[in-house]
Image (cartoon, rainbow, N blue to C red):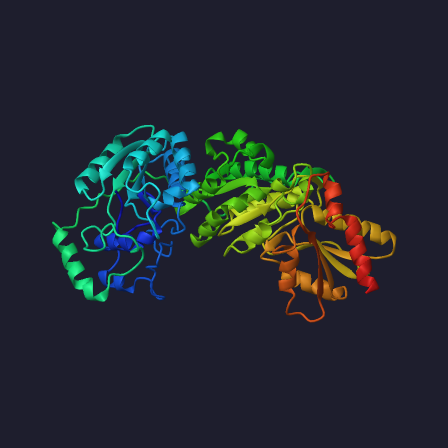
Length: 570
């Protein structure tokens, strides 16, 4: 590898991803040999005051992405390699070490397919075929021939080596550097615990220390195998990586929508991406074969060289986005139906641990998508994304707020999730309206208001329809658009609840568990005299027209009116 040992995060350095994160002590030892870590620090492995954690995290500057939840490192490496080849167009290479046990994960094969499809010849993966998993043998054992055939069938340049033979490994790595048009997989046959009596190739040693009474003899055995203690010279990288600017991105113009015009927020997302892409050439967009539904296709049409089609492989799409965003080389937006992000939850969780800045947009939220039915309806996504540390959750209710959500997401540190809807909804806000993360909008207010109703997306429009009907009956409600569900604008909610008698009704196109209602209830939990009633989807939904489904599941204007009147009656 070519890298600067004193600047492990330098953009010109070759990248290394330890997908088999449980081998972290070896990674730390390697960086000690390179001179970045002091040898004495190795004795603090896994301790509370040390950054040498049990599995690698970006607390360490030489770790780009957190690993340890297996099957994810190769996807991130694909994102780094794609960025190096097609965006940065530079000479740095990407290396990824996998375990044979994790090759049972489907996401590994999603990544293999992605890398060969995009001819990532700057990517080298090494699979450590040591036969043993955590609790028993991996399914293929030491059958390196099958690994070879499978990787080759996926379009990789593949070779088999003795993983304990340094010369063979070096020869394979050199050959990989000469390969054009294909990524390279090195299938390395190894023996776990090689050279250690009673441990080599034996079951049930995963993650276990050598017994204290055998430590000295084992160390002596290992030292006797070392042929030289000389440190190899480290080759510096070429200085051919262009500078990037991924901060303070400004839209080139204000939104151009008119109040009352009907536009789906999912379409507004695509249009906003086009504008953002014009403002900054480092904005890239990924999608999972849903671009004609998420409207990411508008970005592809405007900026085809910065669009990545990830096909129907959402787990890999999230990992590729993670790799693209590593070292702040790009501002990566990835989109699919919000329901399909649930499949990739562990990858999103690991992106949170990686402190990534990826931006995710989930369309087709809730029962309001209509006839496509429950398999396509996202009803768990708010709960999922609210749990991710540092994740900002946007839920825009019209095209103007959607455009601001995209702009704010691009400039917000950490993972961002934008929840968009399928139906066309009226524009509520003027072109000059200003939006901020964590700042709600009071969209209907009067001195006679008796209840606060909080809705988002389609249910905000249902709340406004309910407000119009109730006003005809002399009943007035205050309607709030939260804009961001995390962070939630507790101050605005509490002050308006107190001004209207302390009654809040939340209405959401989402399950009750983990949604807007629970977020609001938590925000006001320390405030005496404020009561929260939640209207949300319950049970398994079905196909139908959007209006029928909103009504069937109790989140339509009619049900809001009933809830408001019930509040007065009680």
